[in-house]
Image (cartoon, rainbow, N blue to C red; front, side):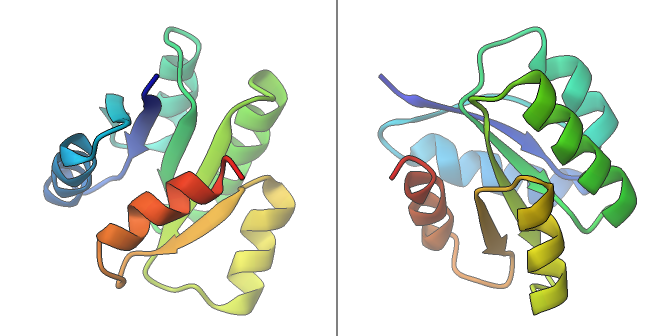
Length: 121
């Protein structure tokens, strides 16, 4: 059974890049995408998702609130926070809110698959 991934990123081109990369991977199925965290919470209630890939850079406050809301509403959901700026304070803030892993968007994309897999260890 494939890992069902939902992608949230405010930049259309970057979101499409992540989706295209993930869709090439065996064992991963991209089940949806939206531009912001508020839209994601709505969409999550309408489909079965294993991993929420959430861009934190759009708005820290909105993303952190969405992480908390998603964790409460969907306790089995694994959340991966993505950022260009993985400073320790920011990573701690995301982990405290409920992310399972953090992906540095400056990293190579093959690392994203490893981060997603790590959520299931």
